[in-house]
Image (cartoon, rainbow, N blue to C red; front, side):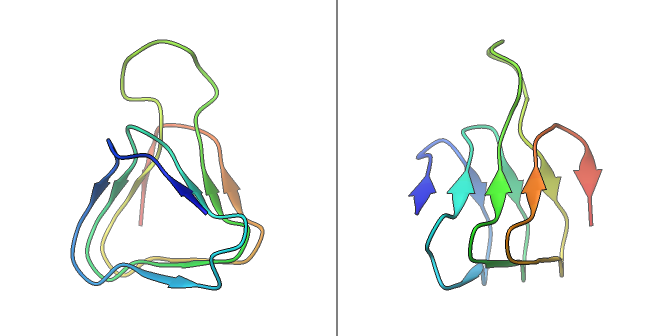
Length: 74
């Protein structure tokens, strides 16, 4: 499991089986989010801007899911 210390994580964040979880530097994870094994909240650009996804409230990210960009989700 790799969670960048710069990631913004809100309340009641749940990880179901941490193997392969990646949360990038500019990711925002709002309240009541669940990530399952192998989920990646990564970025594809090298600029030092907002480049990782934002997950809104009450989101479930399934096993093996990859979200490689910056867009609102949830």
